[in-house]
Image (cartoon, rainbow, N blue to C red):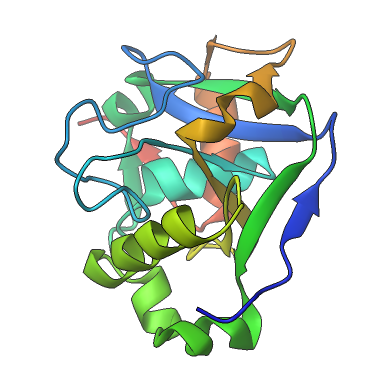
Length: 186
């Protein structure tokens, strides 16, 4: 892999997570070796924490999920909490942004799609061959920045002042409307 200039998120930056009630705000997953997320280790050899630079983007990446469905169920929202994380040191992130995506044989269709074989393979290469703490990428829902932090950089994040908060009905409706969605009862 060609040398790539890592991007930085400085110490003290806030990141946002929408996470399952059963998981801590700082959760590197998946639970077992079977990959679930976009940049999970194909063989389970490392774990990944996903976060976004904004609460709206975290909501989109976690709860919107299927853009063709015009609504979000209240039960999907009620099964989650929202948390802020704070970087304790600068994060060095491998950018999968802009034209650099093509250098890895990926297109934005691959990067933003819901078939993860190629993105997991690239994650493994980045994890094994660079000094990156994780990956910087864009949300498929609002083109804002997200991070996939590798577990070897767990020391780079801590809980923010606002964590494990219930997403209220009004807040959920506002976040859903950002993506043109409504909240419905199941």
